[in-house]
Image (tube, rainbow, N blue to C red):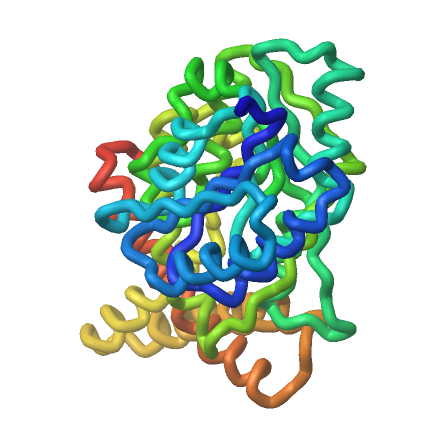
Length: 328
């Protein structure tokens, strides 16, 4: 049976999050026979499959199907598998850590059929809401940037024809980083109309993060190089106008400090130390401004601020080498 909308959700071993997301979809105001949900696990995931099986036992009319990739390839590959196995022409994407509001699918469908007359080449970007605590952590604020993003796969809808024209998601983006910007840029390149839907809302709660999560996040920087190689002009215009000069100042001043200490140059060492500490402390203070003042968070911001510039540059250069592009 043909559906109006197919919802694709990539997941991987996060059963509690997946369960909440599916329950939100089960409570959509759109009739259950009008849409399907395709859950694609990025690798074997028995607990995720059990979530879907248990939900179907309680709600047999809810059209949800579970697939598992044979090997882990990243959310981009999982999304491609999902939309390629979808029954509907209009594909809606969200993530397992998101909660679509009750009118999410209905408002997407109204826009698709009424406002824009169901064209074959069209895409929509909905609204993301990130609830924050009164004194958010640095990680919460970073997640909240999704609210301002031009295009995110946590809340978008694209016709199958548009996905075929763009080639879908680039599976070289092996983690949840820049794969949505890559698709966005391909939509622009193909002159596919992209409309913002303010009334198609998805809630994106901030997941609990381990201490020092920002250090691990730096590895994603290597995928900036891939996006820049593919779309240098759009990358500089819409993502990052220039390299993070502050990071390079910190790293270079630290290297000069080490070299001058080895050479026995006291004045150069003193100047390099002052520059290094000035920019590093300023970086840490900016991250602390308006955020949680708990001892654990303050300690985390100070400690990670001394590490992030080095790791960010390391992974940026690694990406430039891997993807063979001059990128800083």
